[in-house]
Length: 329
Ligand code: PLP
Image (tube, rainbow, N blue to C red; front, side):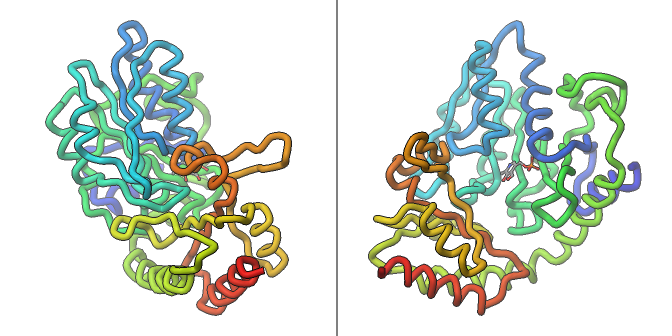
């Protein structure tokens, strides 16, 4: 475990950091948020996040809000990026914690982490947490990991084992344990560690960082090929930021077709896409992020395409032709 820790830290080029190994990013996010915020349970402070975080962040903030914390949920523009001025203006004398994701898992937009670091640095009492799950090893960091107080990563997003993840944090931060019990991991996460998962995570982090530039070029080519072929089709819209995007995720909204219908149609050709809605007539539940960014009607019509280094141009061609078939029906 010690070797794993030092190998992950050196792969990330970090120093003065330590690692809490967890069962995944959900637990790492919970550990970071409650680990810091529970220190302020008696004098509820102000904390900041964005409106489009993963539920494992957003639901913790909602819970803390119920407990009396003052929470700012930063808005995002149409493509899913915060405005750095909004962050600057949101910070108050009693702000203690900021949590902002690197890459959004639904629409693939990239948050301005470098600028966020600059802003938060001016307030040494604020701890900065970044959910790096969708960015690590996929896109190149234009910031220094050393400048982030708490970093969340997940094993299964980088070909590690499902059920592995980690919170990487500054040596001088002690967290209130989120998982309580024995004294493992410096009293910050009780329970016997999953050593196999940790070793898998270590290999995955090293490999994915080494291959990041090549994989990026490959995936980016497929992504642009897909985007070019879908742009201008009058029955769909691409939900993307032209500048700050990850080529691993493409969100597509159909004007008049339900995402579930598109998903099942594509499924019959062995193409598997994600949808943010479970829209049976009774429940009509949609992904809260999509609902926030669009509206319920459009959110129900939105699919998410994930591209990886394992995909081929032939597969993308098939996807394009099937999207056109269903759109032009
Ligand atoms: N954060 C982001 C941005 C994610 O995309 C995910 C998973 O999809 C998670 C957190 C949760 O990760 P895990 O499945 O490891 O709990």
